[in-house]
Length: 196
Image 1 (cartoon, rainbow, N blue to C red):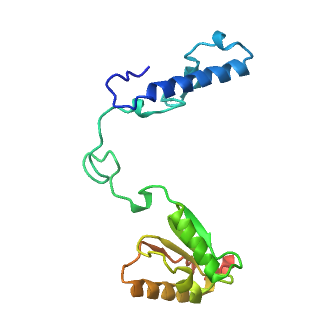
Image 2 (cartoon, rainbow, N blue to C red):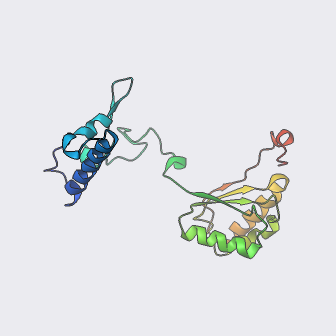
Image 3 (cartoon, helix red, strand yellow):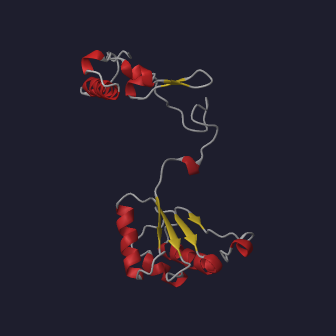
């Protein structure tokens, strides 16, 4: 068991870890149709999996498993423990949500977008191949901070028109944009039916 005496862990950490281990004992007892007292308290160790190259993978990792040495360097800096370069695409998890795929009114699409951004969505994908078109971008993005919400356009044959409309909004806002992906595939659209 990891020595927790010198670790800076919350007071309830040991209790929570013990509760997890007791729960594992309970599951093993139920599955093997034994009394809980007949199952060893360290039965959780049977859940450790060893890979083909000899690495043990624990069923549960906690802050107690950290080696205690803080990582001060940034990605792309010596000694490169966090990667050889800063990769903006892998900066963290994000949530992408698509809007405009249904026959909703533009005002409803705008309401959905604002609600999604306030609820954790980080990237907006706008489907402009149906009822919602490039001419609706201004109303659909009303109240959206374009410099904070990356946007992916899916406009098919109207990609150029959609890009022009979006960049006009960005220019009018004067704040720049977080990121724009045009979703254009001019080389494959002729064969896959996307029409961009």
